Image (cartoon, rainbow, N blue to C red; front, side, top):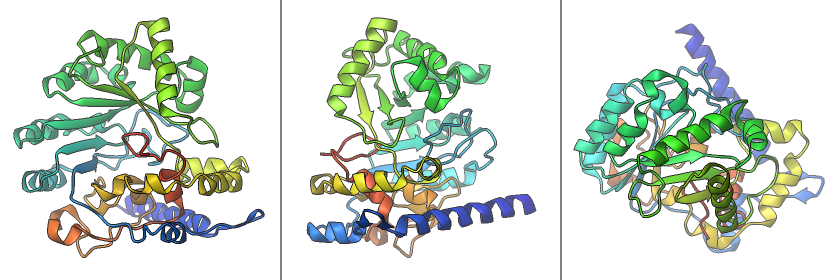
Amino acid sequence: MITSLHKRESELANSKRQLEILSNGIFKQGELPTFKQKISETGQFPLRAKKLEILQINLGYMCNQVCEHCHVDAGPDRKEIMTPETMLQCLEVIKSTGAHTLDLTGGAPEMNPNFRWFVDEAYKAGIKDFIVRSNLTILQTNKKYHDLPGFFKKHNIHVVSSMPHWTRGKTDKQRGDGVFDKSIKALKELNAIGYGMPDSPLRLDLVYNPSGAFLPSNQKSLEKDFKKALFDDFNIHFHHLFAITNLPISRFLDYLIASENYEDYMCALVEAYNPSAVKNVMCTNTLSVSWDGFLYDCDFNQMLQLPVNSKVKHISEYNEHLLEGRTIVTSQHCYGCTAGAGSSCQGTLA
């Protein structure tokens, strides 16, 4: 208990440190405008929550991988796991709202010991649009996960998986040795039961994150290159590629600072600001639930300990009337979602 308390205090201190770094916008290149100032200039302040469409639930920070860009600092040593009690509270919200999509994330969400039970119960509750953000390698890690492709198919789960590149070197550099080969094997298994195949209703999408301090290139062009390379080299099919900008938080922020790229990266995000992307940011129609049930506008805010601007702070207190129309909590990291073509968990926005 004491160890857990100390870890929690350490995480809060780290979140505070990262917020202080982000808030200090004075660089050699000049003082950067705050995100609030920027969206005010384009007449888009304040950002407000719309009707809830997507409930994104973090089932825990435990993961079989330790990826360089991971914004939740996930890994095998993380013990934070959503309890069945909190899951039941999430199910009550699912039953009472008009949310059409349940988005399960982690860590590796499949590592939560109650993952399958939760999916079964949510399915019974009427949710038909499931997203599971799988890292693919979990399907190859342990025998108890080997039958997950069939479980996904049974519930018509939309599988969204990170795939940094179509080459072994770039993928393993970002995600660890052996990740590429395991990912390819998992993709072949998913293809074998219909996932990602042309005209198949079993949706399989991949996620691309840049491997360094730069913004992703055009999503459609990247998708074309990924599809050609994976089909030519491995006869692998998938439906769409989501290009997601790395936000300057958690491990990626630490990397930017250590590599002395932080200032240039922040300036690049601000210079690429696109007011068209602001219109569709995911925080306006998505509610993020942390592993312990607290509510955030997005999972990036979750890692910076920036809770929703509402009297309702926890899933057990959920009140749609009080949450709808709330002002979205923003900081400098929000430039990552509004740079260039924009970025969200479903890819580009503009």
